[in-house]
Image 1 (spheres, helix red, strand yellow):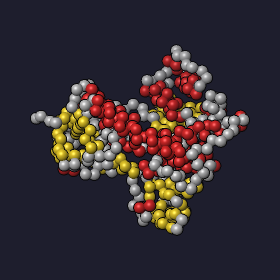
Image 2: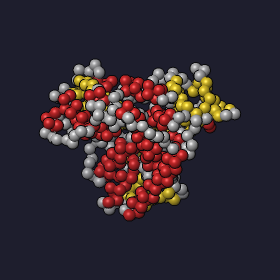
Image 3: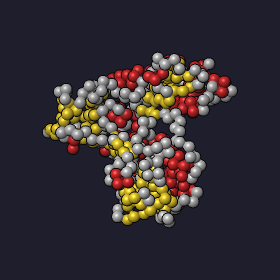
Image 4: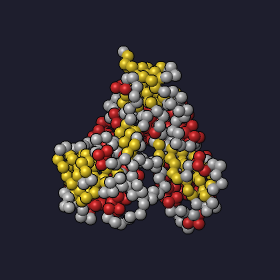
Length: 448
């Protein structure tokens, strides 16, 4: 059978475009279907926007530590000017991606993609056929089914706020709430975080989270744990939030950050017998759905590993290699680092502290990094790293607390994936002084 394309991708985010580019470069005829802005959520409404808006606060936070060293000055962030810069910068990325697609002869089909059969995709009433189809439709913000849900906002809307509300309430104490609440508090807003559980950031080391929560509380963030939001009402000067436990808050803006759900509706999955659930599309070890020539990639996949942009890119690269016959083995994920953009940052990779404690297969090494290497961590006293070592004296897991956690966790991830030993590190010379050189020394000592 002759098809219009070798591969059609539904969705243009990281879960798809990496594979599309690889396949196009080797001569495959490729099309990408996109109903929204080209390049997906991360590029346009998520990671890039968040990082751009967050970065100035990193400098403000770092400079505040040097007040004891005589460094003072006006370090206020002008949110309106920062947002104006973001709104000018972020929209330039989609045209760049579209230019790359055009250069590679990748057809960008704008519209809603739906499966009609194993080889046909309907794009707003126009049908195209393909040998392979890849679903990378991602996720969207969930919305609490409560009275007044029409007053709730999501992360995409927050990252587009021209004016930061003077009073803002976050529902949920996960990554999104903790990151955004950090920024709002540093701008002087009255910030409340309501969480159903008894702690924030449940997937991260409790002692690290406690440090972050304490700092946020000192900056004016009010935490309300063991509370379930029951309703949100409009009042004369804003909104009233009420919980089942009778907590009542008056606020101006409510962000619902209680989770994300996969975009699986109206894709034609049921008609083709492709299984999915509330976590996403079910795939096998080759990322194939129940229809072998139809794959799923990225956040829309039903999986337990972290749903992150680098994970989606990794899966996209794998699908390209599988289709080309370069790698027909089951997908094998390396250690996957993840990072929370609070102050200080929290990062972890590999075997967690909870998994390692009480397990004779592992040794847990605590390094009070900020106390031992104060000048290298830029006076960040609370900086800390926890290393998990296996019986072979290999680094298999790590957690890092500190504002350079993002760069440091990448270095630790490299050590884990490459099974770097103390002997290996002893044969290398690194630039000194620096946070990374201090970390490498600490790892080398722990591995002995």
